[in-house]
Image (cartoon, rainbow over all chains, first blue to last red; front, side, top):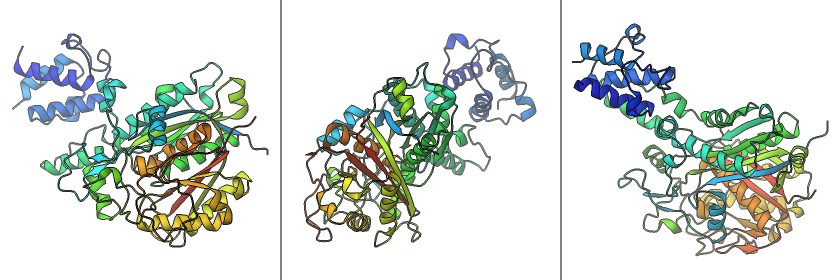
Length: 78
Length: 417
């Protein structure tokens, strides 16, 4: 697993208070990991801070699963 | 319309003296001070370096990590005491309709630490607004009542009163009024505060409101003592379950005491200084006696606001002597802030509990830290100095006054069917 993927998973485990085993690439933040809309906003902000990127709202809407977050950040992280 | 009777059927406390009602009362009865050096932040550069903090509080004992992270400490405190009180009153009961249960809470400030942290983060950044989505819902004072209602599904009247140090007493009076008017069967009321932060201590220091007796924190809160030099900031929470009497009786609830009156007034004088003649304090005590329709002579004990400030203590005692006349000499008067410090918006809640427990236990908790008499006070008054006094307390009055000139009083009576 990439370093980015490791960091993304760590943020999700911390912010959503879930077990590492639940954080699979297919896991949806809202449907599988118990996030509400505010949690999702917070996650995006944490990704922006950790990876020093700015994620526009229209792109943030497409980040709904662990895998989508990892691939977006692998592509855009500086 | 005929007003309904209102009784107290549950209590909860998280205080500098103990983390439940039994521990809190034990501390009060034994004259224990809750003051100690500040642990919540490095206070070495502050004029005041001590406070009455809640001790041994571990959020993970009460919340999962994700839940705790979304609540400022003042809301966590609210949830902890509400749980103790709800369990104590056995409110999760098929005979209680959750649509008729309200939550009316009090907090003077709300999420001060959250506000401070978010502003510091922004100030340290490059100007890009990276505010946490939980910033506002963690900070706002009313969220405490929201959290309690969400946890239990209580869907009756729900809000928070804000009147600085009178907040919780305003919440108790509102709850009393809604129930006696028939607008709710039960209300979870009380207050919580968690302002022992850099902004809280620094702000009150700037007002010259806090004691600066850093060499002896435990003796710093000394209401009515000649050498008192300000209040000691406290933190924590208290909860009371108020319930319509017939409702409580029908479900066999235990009854601590009856709420018989609420009084409110304003000083209309100064933003922080009390009226020098205690005009607002005088009016609020007249109002509460009139509301309860009792004579001054029926009151046994006054749990005073008594914060240990030079001016406030004097004006409150003047008001007591005017309202109670010769009966003032027969009263027990005490300031439990000498032990707990000043919990601001939660003060009215934990002091109401002190008054109720005094009724229940026939014991008046003391005003500790009395060393030197102050000739400003009539030597014939009984301030219950230094040691609790046994006494049958049939009626107890609790006063709380807030910055802004808000005055509130509530009366509790021994319950007689």
